[in-house]
Image (tube, rainbow, N blue to C red; front, side, top):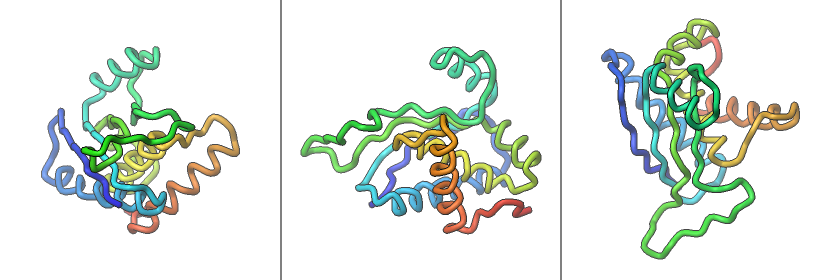
Length: 159
C-alpha cells in the first residue's frame, strides 16, 4: 500500500513551511496503511485564502475561506473499480489553505507541521467516506485522525 501524491503549491512558502511538507507524505502513507488500502493516488494543492474561498463558493455555495476541501472520485458505498492498466486507485483531490494552517496551529497551540498533517489526514478520510455530520460519525473520524497522527508523532500541543 502506498500513496502516490501529486502535490502542487500555488502560494508562497517559507523554507520551514516547505520542509514541513514532508509530514503530508508521512501522514497520508500512515493513513493508507492504517485503513489497509491498496495503492492509491490523489492530488493535494496548497493555496491561499482567496483561492480556497473561490472553490468553497463554487463547489459548496459557501462564500468564505475554509481550511481543507475534499473532492472524492468515489461515492462512499461504491466499489473501487480500476482498469488493468491502472496501478493505483484514484481517490480524488484535496485543497488546503496555507493561511488557515498557520492560524489554526496558533489557535490550537501546536506546530505548523501538526496542523498541516491534521488537515491532510482529515481531507484524506473524507475522500474515503468518513464524515462528521452526526456525533457518532464525528467520534469515529476524529479518533481515527488522532490515531494516525499519533502513530507518526504529530501530537496535540506539540509546540
